[in-house]
Structure formats: structure tokens, C-alpha cells
Image 1 (cartoon, helix red, strand yellow):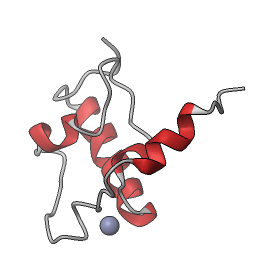
Image 2: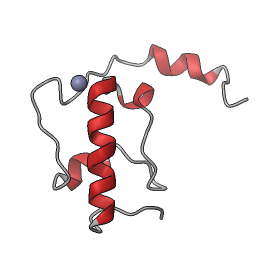
Image 3: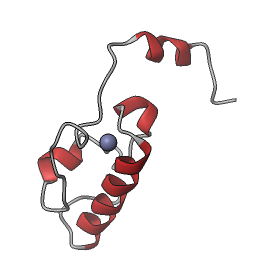
Image 4: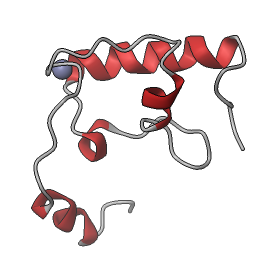
Length: 77
Ligand SMILES: [Zn+2]
């Protein structure tokens, strides 16, 4: 049901590469970077949108949760 034809258009976009695979190390203090991985409602953006690889998506998700726990990022807006 969430799968619509728009999904295909995402795939046509410029191929994004995982920022962490390019050598950047993201941790919970990198609020500016982590903000790119949450949407305006404070939810973690799926990796098919961000282009992050599976391994680093897990890492980023963990850092986001850590940042939320200490109040650097919102749980919801
Ligand atoms: Zn990666």
C-alpha cells in the first residue's frame, strides 16, 4: 500500500553514496550530519532515500538514538 509508482522516480535520481563509506565518521555529536538522516518529523529516513549502506545505516540509526537520549535531536516535532 505504501508502494506507489512514485517509488520508481526515486531510483531515477542521482545515485547517492554512503557518506561514511567516503571516510566520514559520524557520531552522536555530529548533530548537523545526523539531521540529514531524520525527516522533519524527527524520524530516521530509510536508507533507500539517503543512499547509506546497510552497515552504516545501522550505525547512524544508533547514533541518532544516542543523540535523542541526551537531547541533541528530537524524538518527534
Ligand atoms: Zn557505508
